[in-house]
Every structure is written in structure tokens, then in C-alpha cells.
Length: 617
Ligand SMILES: C[S@@+](CC[C@H](N)C(=O)[O-])C[C@H]1O[C@@H](n2cnc3c(N)ncnc32)[C@H](O)[C@@H]1O
Image (tube, rainbow, N blue to C red; front, side, top):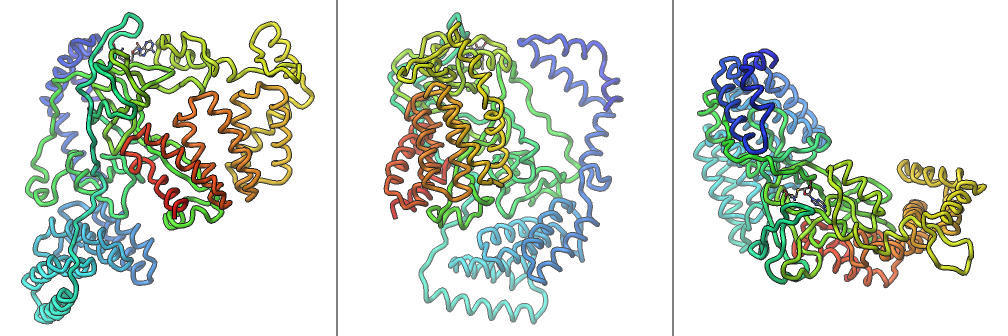
């Protein structure tokens, strides 16, 4: 790499270094053009892509070893380990490697398909057979396996077709006879049923509802520069923008668990990149647009294709990266378990939802939306697509602004300003920061020394006196530690009676010194609720959860998404207690989630459907 850098003329390096927003695209193109003409650069690309010199991570011996390991595990019925070995072998196997005169990758897909068939993952099994057949179209065993699985799926027409193919490609007479027998059985089964095959359910499809993009216009304001505004009145929960990323990168922590193209969680039968061992995809639907080769034409092209260079016409000087997040639900007691999650939420389980980042992406048009600490639009992601929806009624001409992070209710004004200044280098000019609001007043306020006064003590000479008093409170240092202790105990899932007692005492101290709507009280209530769930004191947990929600409803708007997340927790506790109030909580959180996600709510928060099915059964 250093040698390549040295080979780039100083004039080009200087030109790129001194580029302005306006000429970055053309200077980058000049650099790329120069690199493509360097033999050292071409050699490096060839080396990286050459399966034989190992730079791409492909390793035939390693793949064969893993295949044997998978076969042994299969024979001893250790199916999890067999699945892991076959999947790992698929990552290592070079596309053109042979194993006993058969393509190794095709054989591995077939082995994994047989395993999926055995454990009842029929759709995955069909998909792996299909992958094997794309590589080796005359692979009799793959046709045979797919025929058998299709028959088990009730897809008899395709099953018969598959077995016919298997028979014609099978070389041995015994084999042909066995397939014939199987065919007759399936034809017989077909006569007794009328079920039809409904097709594969690929992981990455999304449905789009009505888009109101035409209702937006670009405006410029002296405070915030360019931004987006509504051209007409737009109802709450309307989709106003949707966009595919210009560029996207998966987070390191998600590389083994999420698809490198759509960023959805990987299915049981991921496909690896055909050229190297790093990316994993849900299916060919993601692998191909990510720049992968189709199996069917891979061998023709292998080694002969140069590097693909994308058009650098469009420049990205105006864009900012956005974190792509997913909503994840987690059971309080154990790691999430599919069957439990869907069947027995009410069975003394408590659950919460959290947002986890899975990638970073650049959306060119969306980068024109400005920030507000009181946003009126909400951005979310389905696969890699960005969606923006109004969270309230927006009248004509009103700016459409989302939150870049901090919001009213979450941090007070000074902390929001600091956050935006530190992270994005601008002084926020939104109306949440320029107009007085109750939340900013009470969020970190103290209570009055007079127990009958509900007033707010602010940072003034009086409040300074209170702060001083608070700092010198006999229990104050211990109380702060207690909250940390409780959080540590929750993380380690080791909650003793003493920890709980200490936490209750700390909450009492907070309640007697802080303003009733101070955010710290809501956090302490929420932590205590979570800890009490662990020790199965669900009645007390429910009360603390409600107390936390009451404060948050004042700090935010009662239909804010933050309340929705808290209501998931409350509803699952109420369901566990057979509390009929669960229905109201679920109805309320349904309203909130629809406000933020519209008809996509079920795809984004599948957990809501589970809660509803338990509550309304
Ligand atoms: C993603 S861009 C938004 C589009 C930008 N206004 C433009 O003209 O290209 C983010 C930048 O817009 C400006 N901006 C966005 N929201 C703002 C706000 N609430 N107050 C002040 N400036 C803001 C800041 O300069 C910020 O760095």
C-alpha cells in the first residue's frame, strides 16, 4: 500500500488534499484514474481476489476439514455443531474447488440442505438445494433432495419435476430405481391433497405504503441553511420520504450476525461472499446487489474480471452519515429464545425493547432535513431503506425536522446544546432550545425545602444552596453508589435483598430532594422495576414502572416513542400478573408505535404482535 501511495504523483495528492466541496468529485476521479493505470494497483487487486494465494481468505483444505467435521456431527445428531461447521466451510471453500470430482461449494450446500431437511427447516433446505443446483445444474442428489423437501412442503408439482430431473441425471441404475419409487409415492400423495406451494419467503422484501414525497419543498433559512418544509397540510403518521443509501457499512460487532447488505439478522442459511470470506448475506437477493457474482456465471468470470469502478460523478460533499438501528426486544430473565418469546410472554416473563445500532449509512436527500429538539418527523429503517414519517399534523409551510439525537425530555437545554455542538459543530436554533418549556425546567430541578410547595428550585442562589445541601446530605455519596450498584446488579443478573433495599432507600432520598419530575427519579424507578422483575416481585415492579412512565409522560409528550418503549415493559409485567390493565397499555403502545412507524409497525416491532396475541387471545 505504501508503495502505491508513493507512486501517486505529488500534484494529484495535493489536489485531492486541497479539494473544496465543489471539486471533490472531480479530484477523486482523477486519483482513481491514476490508480487504475498503476500496474502495482492492478496487481494488488488481483492478489486480493486470487483464491489460490489466500489473501481473500479462501482455503480449500480448511473447508474440507470443516466439511468432515460437519459430517461427523451430523452422524452423532449434534445438529447445531454440524450447521456451524457446514456454514463455516462454505465461507472458506473457493468457488472453483473440487471434492471427489464435485464442486465443493455445491456439495456443502447440499449437505447443509440435508441437515435443514432433517431438523425441519424446509424453506432453508429448498434454498440451499437451489444454490447447489445453480452451481452444478446436473447434481442429481441436489434435485433429489429438493424434490423430497418440496413434497414435504406440499409442493407436489415441483417435487415431481425435481425428481424427474434427479432421475435423468442419476447415473446408477439402483439410484434411478430409488428415485422412481420416491416419485410414485409423491404422485400418490399428490392425489390425496390439494395444497399448493406459496413460494419462498425471502428475508429482505419490504412493503411500501403511499409516499407523500411530492408534498415537500426545499427551503433556506438564515439560522439553519437549507432544509425541508411541507407544501401542504400533512396528517400525522404520513410517509414523507423514503430513500436507499448512497453508501453503507455494517458495524464490526454485527459482522457475524447480520446481513452485510440489508443489515437484517442473518437467517439459518446465510450465503457467504463468493470472492472472500468476510461478508455474509441472507440470500442471493442481497449478495448480488452487494456486488457478488451469480453462482451460475461465477466460473466463467472467475479471475477474468477486473475491478469494478463505480461512477464518481455524484459527489457526496453534502451528506452526513446516519446510524442504522434496529429495535430489539430482550427478555429480562434469559437470553431471547424464539419459542418462548412467541408463546409465553404472560408466563412470568418481562420484556423490554431497546434500539441497537447495526450500521452507518449515507442518505443523500435525507441529509437535507434539519434537526429539532422537538422534532415533527421520525426516521426509521427497514432493511437498508430509510423511511421518514410525520409524528404530528404538519401544516403548510412548516419545516420538517427530525432529531439528530437529543430531544426535549431526554436532556435539558444546556446539555442538548453541548451535545450538538460537540458532535455536529452547530449551535442549535430550534424552537425547543429557544422557547421556554416545562420539561427543561423540571428535568433536573430540585424540590423546595417547604414540603407543601410543589414549586421548582432552579439553578439560582437558592438552588445553589439546595445543591450544596444535597451534596452534604448524609447519605448522598452512598446514594449515588447505590444506583450504580443496582445497575451493575441488573447487568450481572445477581440481585440480592440488600441491593434492593439499598435501591429503595436511594429512591426515597431522590424523591425527597429532587423535583417530582426530575429525570433521575424516573431512571431510578425504572431500574428498580427491572431489578424487581428479576426477583419476580412483579407487583412492586409494576408500581415502579408506572411511576417512571408518569414522569416521562410529563417530560415528553404522552404519545412519545419513549413512552411506547416503557409501555412494552409495563404491559409484559401486567400480562405476567394477569392484570386486565395490560389491554389498555397495549392499546396505548399500539397507538404510539403506529404514530412513529405507520403500517410498518409490525415489521419494525414484531414484538407488539406477540403482546397483542397474548393479551387479546
Ligand atoms: C444534515 S445538514 C442539514 C442540511 C443543511 N442545513 C444544509 O444546508 O445543507 C446539518 C447541518 O444543518 C445545520 N442545522 C441543522 N439543524 C440545525 C439547527 N437546529 N440549528 C442550527 N443549525 C442546524 C447545521 O449547520 C448542521 O451542521
